[in-house]
Image (cartoon, rainbow, N blue to C red; front, side):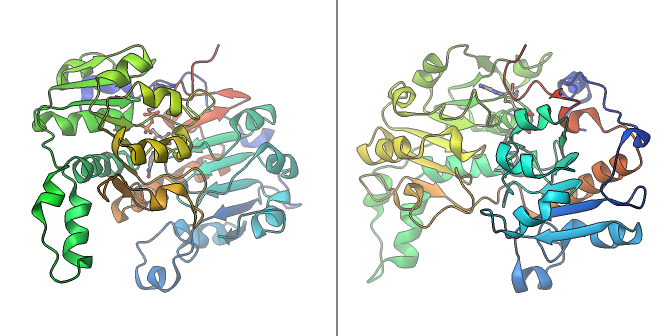
Length: 397
Ligand code: NAI
């Protein structure tokens, strides 16, 4: 189940569209009926992936799909080479029926790329978050976009709690003193000057869906002063009551009340650059910002400026506006005035070994459903039959 307790079951079903595309109505690229070409864009794990077969989301271990697809006679191409018109992805996508990618090393399916993919019918996100596909362009072409909803939401929620604590307690400054400090680094005051308790702080989530809600649940035992959420959808039933969370309808009003803001909404037209130079002004001086949703929800330069000026005491997360992040990305080097305030890591919160098993299994299920003409699990559908099948990607008519 997607949500923890059964009486929250209506929280799962925020989708409305029927999901069935009969096999007979499909046309395939291959001359042999029912044979398809599947292209997977995954990250390369190198020797590590050969040593650790549970690293399923890698080009080496191929989400566990190779045997299955080969046995069924389908063509299966896997690559990590995804940038630009000469990449393997650009060359292989032109006749692919299905594209699978993970958000950790996303194959970016822009409108232009989709236009070259003449046979494309299904995009599967092995994980959660399908913003790497231009969803409006997919709709125009009646391409289905599905993801493995819920597969890594606990993994991310745990990472959010960790990142909040790393920032609020100024952990990195202490850790760097110990491992990098010359002459036996040990300056407690230099750490403690920016170290606080989470207890008594106001924490708010932008987006209170599967991850946002799990973050709120995990914050309850910390005795925060208040838990807030900003979302155009109300938490269902008595979910808000269970975590004692209050909804704030206006973004700036919400930001002005939070000591810690955690971002847990999808990236879409309404959330791109949501946290920018203007909205940061509404945040409390010395607040912390955690973003494990998508990098482009926060303006990179505005965040760096706010951390360096001290308006934000710190920023952390694992998502970047382009992945892999370029060497000179401002979030790699930014620090606050006291050499702290940066809790960035590569995008990995949702790709723990536990999560990889779940999203690999879910990918197989989505693919098998499609190949066999069976309906998809409604909660996995992002766009289908030319329209949004979820309410999570912005308020639409
Ligand atoms: P969900 O669909 O359960 O919840 C998303 C919530 O965000 C919904 O309640 C929706 O109404 C809300 N929302 C949408 N637009 C909003 C806006 N403009 N303002 C406020 N709220 C808004 O999705 P879930 O499973 O919680 O995942 C959320 C996002 O987290 C994913 O779309 C993905 O981008 C990111 N993610 C990151 C991972 C990582 O490894 N760092 C792994 C999994 C997800």
